[in-house]
Image (cartoon, rainbow over all chains, first blue to last red):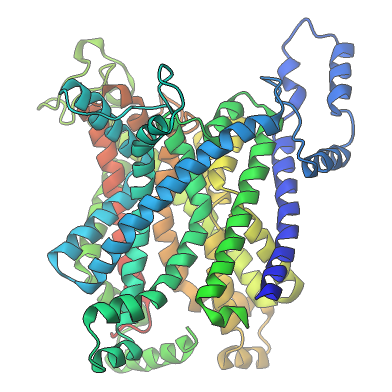
Length: 321
Length: 299
């Protein structure tokens, strides 16, 4: 097991190097950081050259890359072009918020998908199954932001008008109350539910299919033939194997969760990394964009690593392959 | 998967005795999937409407603001109502459908092309080609594509062409992995060995002998990919980096209608429904195709 983990750790190093190269190349090939000054009549060529020299833009690209990477390794992502704050501080402020949202959404996904997926498979072709599969199909085909806007419209705007208990429409906490646990939890309900329910749709479909396949296997028939109760057959014997593809799905889904979080953050004005990225993409703020790309992708690599280890725990065949 | 070649041969025998080709067999199995057939019908109607509609519907109805008929609910003259500047929503839906469907279809064509190429080369040549291409695939998979999409849309300037290319460039990875896995197993089969013996070139082995045997994941992946691409276009439109007004797409119609969601629901409901119906139908067709193309299924 230890050897497996070490091997997987070593494998992710070239991946991380690749990520820094892609992030750097993407940002630097697609635009010139000095372009902001092109239409500024007060900038003399000398002043431009001085700025370029200050930020190292006058050096060849590969030199710029090595300078940047050696700083990134030390945790220094440089300074934002627009706010002049250190990028690591900006990301440090936003990253926990994104993780809270994604964590809550993931919990909701599992809480919804596991019971409904099991029900759907055990009671195959019942009307409950048809309803669940139908809803999953619809959730899968809905634009996330539309669902989010509808939720805001209904649960915060209309409920308020109707005098019902309502949920806040956006943000992370009420400025007049402050950032308390209760406030954050209240503001978290809508975005986390929207994000969680949309991804639950995929999980339900996969869990249903995989459980149906497991149920038809011989060892399940044996368990039934032994006279075990249906509950024991499903929850003790079938579910363990049926969960393996779900772990794979969760693994493949992590980048998607970041993407979904980006949209959800935008809809609910949740101050996370995705929103930070969007705000600074519009301002063409290179250091922030490169920093976020590297951090988000590294998190994906880390999550994949954890999922792989979990996978090896669940399925001994992987460990010895 | 391993028995695909054998099964195909069996199917060929079956086909000759029954005077049916493989394609007919697939179609026969697909037809039994009633939901997928209905979805295919709806998509067909949509395609005809959006591709031919602009011939019959005046462009001005979709593009030119008309202050006298702002925010009108659906009526006989405007079956889906009018929007906040007095444009006919039905006309806009038709014009937008053209753009949205084109984005979905062309982006998928690009992504299937890249995915198949990379998967085929990696699986066929193995060795360092495989290592290099698959590590690159892993790399692309670990960078959340929406972030790249936003960055590229900002730098290259949002336009229909940029969106199509970027969507295509960022979505080929899962298909490449599947194709590679199929190539790895198929290249060891006897029929490939036989083809090699009679002197078939590598290109001929890849394109004439192996590729036709992995058509199932390509077709299914391509179908489902159209839906995903359209949903991604919607998401990018919401961030203001999608198709730019006045050119309508279903995504930007939905986005522009967000302030009117309660006062004039028809402005947002119809484009939303169009996306929902289209993606839903595409997913049904994809599922139907998956069942129909599965050689393990009974004929």
